[in-house]
Length: 114
Length: 216
Image (cartoon, rainbow over all chains, first blue to last red):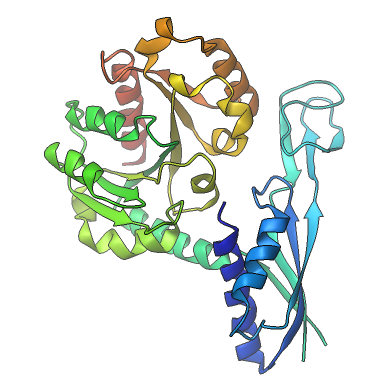
């Protein structure tokens, strides 16, 4: 629901780095979004394109890598990756004691600049 | 040319949240981020908590898209309160909190309650620099809420099931709410309350007091 403010945060962060390092144009940006982060990729792409004009990212293309949710069971010690957005129990032993190790990411990785 | 960025997208929010946390710690303040969908009864639970003779000095930040009804209700309970109008934004972020901290007598408070914008999605994702998240669900919202809005249940330390007096008039399966909420978050503390009849409120208020005093 707040993809617009996420898009603004991305543009602010990459613009800041360009200002510091003296780059004048951003060609593309790679980000990583966990599937359990609550961010919809389509809405984020739409928001990014809608607000990038008049910024240094005006011509930039946003690439989103989606990270599936994965966890580690504390009972049977197995590592697992699920297709769902949330883990309710360990898919191997059904236990409810597990740690989510990935799937909540919202990171900017790198960008192509000139 | 490829340039590494390697930063969290919400880095700016995290930075300010950390600053908020430092301010809270310096003031010896326990902070709760109170979240729910619209109309679940956050403000009513808060009014009841303020009216109880806990001996706690409680301040409140009210977040709403528009209007100051909630701040007026809290003010009538005699608590220091600041209203934030987000002007359309669906959640409070750390900077909105930072900007109003100067308007509250933080040094004279034991507990600060931040009542978030009514919304079961976004408020769970923005760190405000809080100590604990508490969510309110009214049972009239239905037993499907935990599985539809899992993040908020996973992020919260306590769940207040409000309007429990309506149970005889509804088809809602309370056991399903309890079961799904506990599956999502085995550590979740659940309170079943009614602001109308007062049922369950003493247990919630005693717990709130215990958590606050643990810190100070």
